[in-house]
Image (cartoon, rainbow, N blue to C red):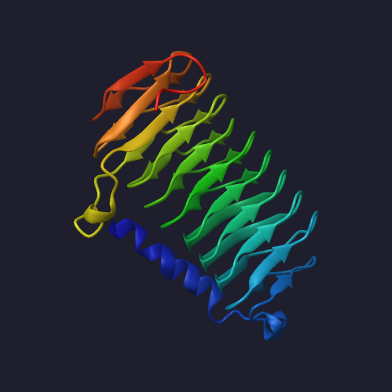
Length: 233
């Protein structure tokens, strides 16, 4: 689990000490970003409106919303969700506690990194690097991940038409996390999905693979093939 601990420090370093004039009214209120440079807050949400281009956006306690067709460099928060709209663009997304949603046709050029919370990538979303989390469900709906998926705890659902390069790695939980890990994660590779590279599981999983999906070698689990749109419960 040690590899995930620096995430909080990275997010905090990006947000702390970078408060600008807009942050005077940031507490308990949304901060709207206009065209220009970076936007940082401590206790407040950040909103990048439709079509606007920004630099780094970050907060400690608050959510980040990047509207459709907007562009940011890095978006990072400690406690709060990140939502990237349809056709929006970002270099990378980082957060500690909260969900991340990447809209249809949106692009994240590098990585998505998380500790706790669900990760959702909608139709035609493009992720140029890895998707990495410690604890939380990962869902792809006809999305493309170029750098593989890595997690410890949480279900994975790779929907039809999705394409994952770099495989899947589900790590064995550390001693500190052991009591919080579900008995067996549920991993689904849906119809028409493709996972290139190794699927390695270091903990118990129930792996279901559509008979219309393509996958690489499986290590640490037995794939159960299913027909139709979804596997049995």
